[in-house]
Structure formats: C-alpha cells, structure tokens
Length: 165
Image (cartoon, rainbow, N blue to C red; front, side, top):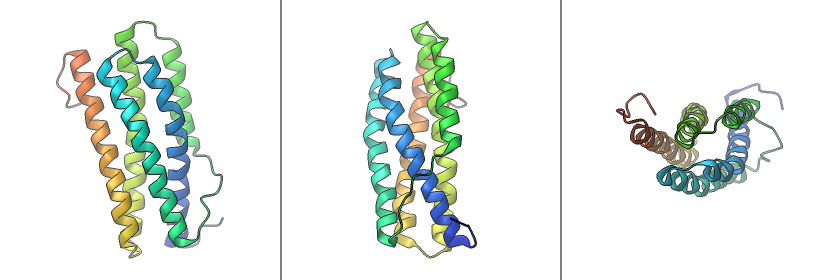
C-alpha cells in the first residue's frame, strides 16, 4: 500500500499497531513464566488480557472503515522482543531477571505509547473522533502499565520509581 495522504498514513500506522499487539500478546505469557516476582508475574498476565483487548480495538477500527489489517510485521517490535529475549537468556539470578523483564517490557510499552500517541493525533486531525477516543483508551492503558512496571522495579531495586518507568 502506498502512503499518499494522511488517511493512508493513519491506516499504515494502525497496521503497525495491529502487528505490535499480535507480537506482544504472544511474548507476555513467556515473560510471565520467567518472572519470579509475584507482582510482576500478575501484571504481565493482566496485561496479556489487556493486549488481547487492544488488538480487538484496533481490529474494530479497521472493520468500521472496511479496511483489512493485512499481514504486516512490525520489525521494530520484533527487534525489541528478540533483543530482550537474548538478554534474558544470559540472566540466571531471579531478581536481576525480573529487572531485565521490566526493562524489556518498558521498551515495548514505550514503543506502543509512541505509536498510539501518533496514531491518535492522526485520527483527531482526520476527524475520526470515535477512532481517536477508542485508541486513546488503549494509549492510557499502555501508560498505566509502564508506570506499574516502574513501581515494581522500584520495589525490587529499592529505589524511587521515577526513572524506572
């Protein structure tokens, strides 16, 4: 698909988000299994359910417009997941592994926050009020998850959460 106008760009970004959510939902159960901290494990499993809903929200936007989400693969998210998994494979200490899982998830969350933020702005500019509203709800859930990851990291690390989310 060529991108020739803001509407095309909106759906291009939405396809990226569809791929992102598809990839994230597959990696969260594995990360939860590797987590030793109960709060972290619970957050990851809760976020798996949220991620499934996020994918449904994105799918609903496509359906409202009669557009197919396609089979694009977000290479940025694939790289974040693969890179984080490589580091996790080198980590044996459970507390260090939990901190690494948090760092890994924060990278993924911040990619999602940036992608949803831009896509919401496009929807607003295009007058797609319902789409902007639905995607904003997802954006706020991603932000909340990043804050929760920071709080858990602060508990594990024994430091203020400020820079850990």
